[in-house]
Image 1: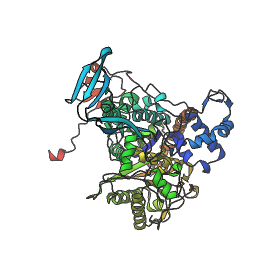
Image 2 (image 1 turned 135 degrees about the horizontal axis):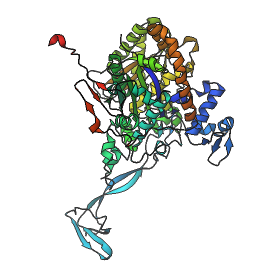
Image 3 (image 1 turned 60 degrees about the vertical axis):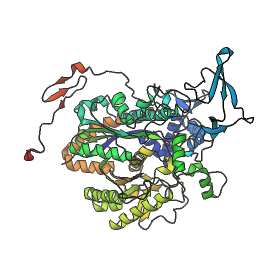
Image 4 (image 1 turned 180 degrees about the vertical axis):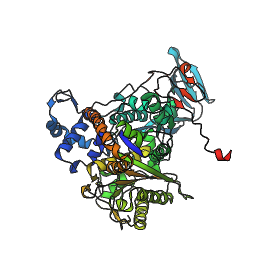
Length: 633
């Protein structure tokens, strides 16, 4: 029998907060939680946003005023709500009303004698244009006379058309959490997200790593755009036009494989497998598929899977705006008949909408095969038995939706019915939709869901969409969906699409249920979720996710009498994980950054014909010596 890939840890950050211990999920369903859960969520976010700090006895604000938990909620609750989820882009990243750029101007002298001006030696071009006469002046400056006309780039500012964003919570700066010098924002998020996920497991990484061979560990992580902020690709491409110098780190830091590389080198110290696969906005599911295939086949026993993207830059937002993909302020006002855009409700999946909202964030999960999870007493939050990926075929537009999602989604439903039974899928499943908030998506994706529901005899099938709350985090979008899916399994709540007043008339709804308020499903426990993702170019992916209760039922069938012993050891794991959650809720962000630590002495690597021993690793890499094509030899 194949191994079952189970989720034993998860973490990350997005506009709703920290992912581990379901903080971000709780923010999306805050009004549906108990008073105690609401308080825990708001206080935890207030600590994350540096509104207050825990000193071991009480919470203190920036003026050193003392607060208990109730007082934190009363004093800072509104600021926490206003500073999370989708909102107007904050100036801490850049001012969307003052985007720096250049205007090309053509200058001609009024008297026809050319143009004369003075430059310092530092400002003088290294290559003097042919139509310039340059004469030295006293003091080290130069007189420049241009014959005829001249072209110049004049610094200018413009206003961005789309100002809503799924920005990290106000006051939370990833760069201040560790020694992040020269790291682009996306890589800062990768380190923070992976550290959060690993700490959430409740089992030290050293224990996990010692339990498997080094090459049985894999890191599967990516970004779409690469690192586009100033310390990465953005600065590399801008430098010459801005009159600046490129740095030695910008190109190396720019690659879209860097989130995986940073985790291998600076978090895990892994010499195992690594993969950075991109599939546009479905990229998280692409790397997730690679990980679960390796776990199911036995090639890998542990996988760290995720993505990190920091796409809130003027260039990225302008590019999507010019495509007509982003919801602009003008179009939001047209939808609502107002003069001021409702930035909080900019993303409106399956409602009357005008484009998506970009978000930023990082999401990571830690997967194990079921046997290792049992052995280590890991806490299991769910399982991913399969992910299906299909292309669209011939397209008339590279950005248009296509036919491939019919294949991926149908295969996912059929697979789930085979694994857990038809009635479980019909009565106890829901959909976490791509839900990008574009007019094309609301029609095409809902049509897929409705037609598949009819084919498989499913009715009143609940649908939710993470992008209503945190925006579209590009490569990490389906990571947001997975993290929120685990929250539904925990709290029996499906977040309503609360940015929508009503479902648009062209949305297919015959067999579907699109809740506009949080849906309590405690009476019909959700055991299966379908995470659907669509990306430019025909990158369609659908994942099947099983609830922890369903996984435990399956493990009981497989392991029988061994379950009580596993459950007893799991209690210790849960206590450790709860200890981390308590610290994290009090704002103690733990970042693993092992720069330059314990370098491998390559001279001490011991190689034989059967195995290779790496110094510092508990187990050896053992060579596979079974010929899988023996009958063809």
